[in-house]
Length: 270
Image 1 (tube, rainbow, N blue to C red):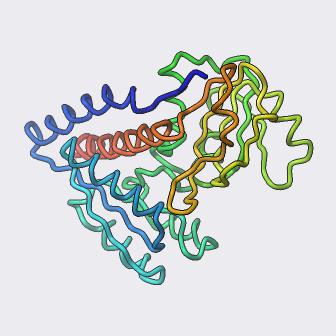
Image 2: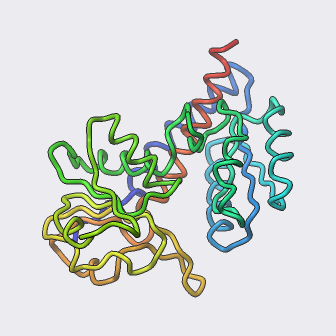
């Protein structure tokens, strides 16, 4: 089994970002700051918030965390939109009431929407960009390949599909209503799964020589797991992200790339 290890690629990106942040501070006297807002208390969110705090500290970007009730989200976002010291804002999903997701995301100033989740984003969504970086970093050419996205969520499936479409690539989308899903998945050369259901992708659905990017995240008995079942990792005829250190490390890198870009955009607008 060949692995797509985002951890191996992250060091080069992190070094470049640290230099960019130092330049912002030294040349322009600017301190980039990311504000993370959460209205849902669960172990997965806590894990990812801590990762972002650590990464920001490593490259010199301040990270402020706001744990609020869902009814207070609008007021918190409005305050951060008006705060000139805040470079970027992300609403850590999922929300307690998921039906309000689009409404809440739309409240974030588009120039501070570093998650790229608004209807007309300036910045590309972090996880899709991480997937693109990961595939490119390992020299996987997508042209002429059959692509499949399992799950059409706000964070991964939908924005990844849109980015690929802009690049002239077309992916088959698998969701709960898709007919002949097994046949579609089995025909795919590159499979991206992002549902958050452990064991969802079966080894029997993955053809020989396929590339699997597992961006699914779920907590099972306190352990974070992806969508791919364990049997896939026993095969030597597939290329797959590792159970830990695949897309995740580059997702954080891509997010902070957007924070740096937002800070630079502020300089250019002056």
